[in-house]
Image (cartoon, rainbow, N blue to C red; front, side):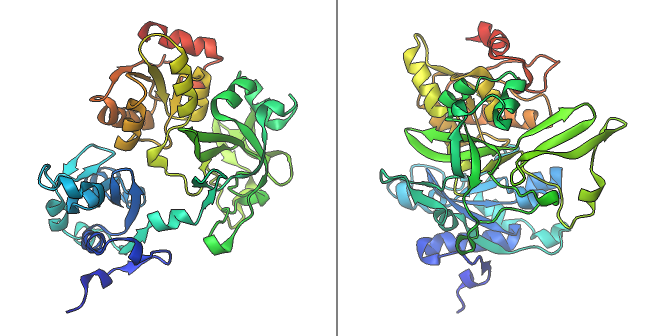
Length: 409
């Protein structure tokens, strides 16, 4: 009889010997119904990520890329740390949509109609082992810890002159470079880690000779328990009247990229003619960073809390510059959603968590995930954002941000 695990194509980087056969069989069975499955190794075992049935229905085909449904394969199969706990929990309840909070049984997921019967064409049925793929991007930090590779050569932001573009960017927005260095070891990347075909490290091409690279960007390091677990690189931009500029990472100058026409930002015409789309990431996360297991500003917030009196607390927001506006109590998660692993990490050190959601659709979705991940673990307090702001980062200074949370502390 043919091994069913061979029914699904696998990615080039997939090393099956690193994944238990039972997990591969489960991944393949789910892929026959839900399309592409990504395997990730997380704190509570191997997880399978795939398109969520509810998110597909609500949000359409973009969910095939987003993959908000996760199945804890080790929990379901009783492997790894779950081996000695088999029979003490309901293994079927090992699947959840992280966007909408919907829980599924694994058998329910297996029994759903395949994507084609739900009107979706050209379905990819690939099982991709992100757990193995991630290892390609890791380097030894000199202390025996394997960490995501560095963005490249960087300079601490507090050692740069005031007329440096990165410092200019921060000062124009009311940020203190010295404070951001203490909180995130904030730096400027002046030379990227070279592209490397052997590990498929590439920087996406953009119009005008730009690339989606950490070079020419602000770097926010992610330090958790004394280990550099990754980094995010923030693109530099500025607006002058009806013109928008981005810092060119290779030309080392402010480059005009957009003009405002009738209130709408429009890409400059010659960029529209190029074969590459203008889709730079606002924040580029370092390859190999486990976004679902870390939060930015964690070590700085823990240190600040340990020096303070009273209940250990922190303030949670979406991006590093939002958390940076608040200072060391500020935490930022990567992406739109806070998940269970991040919730447990936060709850280990903080008994009270304030959170401020962005005033947009993304913020509303984030709010739901924050309640799911933290409401049963800490004293959770939502701080309303004043209507004149979209996010905390739009506030003029740290004093204004602290006035917002003062009565909730």
